[in-house]
Length: 409
Image (cartoon, rainbow, N blue to C red):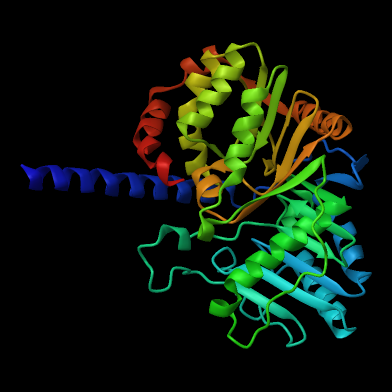
């Protein structure tokens, strides 16, 4: 009997994996040579927050122009970290700018994720000795293969220049992201810059001995720590079992009295997270979740839909961004609280990967985030409960087959 049960379970798991793989391959074939359509964008907006200034970007080319200008103007130090770094035109521009900065005497540190850039040409990933480069390896556990804290990817996107300006958000580096994807990034001045520098240095120092060599010196901080009343940087550090971003979200949602407006590229929360949204909606909070109509990961889309019945029945509005990929990871609540960062609402981001989010408590910044959300909503199709309940049988079957994979994503 045990053998039969074991074989049945293994067969079901194998079927799920093959089914998910087939969906991905079919979707990849269908999207081949298809270009996203234009979508509404918000121009960069700048507001003073506490002792610093925050600028929001929702169009990649605007962001890249300012990031490259900061790199080209660097005098002392550049800290650059990204998850995906394409070897295309935009990627080459960033590489050339960093190499040029190092050549003129700027101290340049670079971190990128090895797994995320497997398909990038090896020649692109060669850098001069004047730059300090940490390629976060594909396999990270070493001999501690049983230690789950060793498997997190570095999913962060950070740029810090001269202790004066920093950038943080969802944008990776690549030509497609410049014009074809809808994402959100922020430019930071003031105490938040020091917090981002500290976040970069902590990751570098945590991984430098194993990844680069014992001779590499630690990245030392010359800035002092200042508490900013309006902004905080939250970092997930799996090696240290630190996952504050999930708690940040839950606390803010549980305190909501007016609205919770959330934009996410991939939405695969745990049930406690879903319950927080349901309870907010039931007490009269205007809860809206803006997602891509079709993301670049079709399996994630199908698994995400397993939550729709609960959400729609409780009055949560599900808005689906059409014609382009929305990759932002943002939320704004009650006209005072907001977050912009790298963490998706899924297990990998909230309990697995290295992530970083900016939390802002400021009415002016929240107003900017609400305006951005309303602009995005103008390009959305809203899913109604009646429409969802009337979906085809084959869709329900696909959701049921993939549902057990939810804890893995």
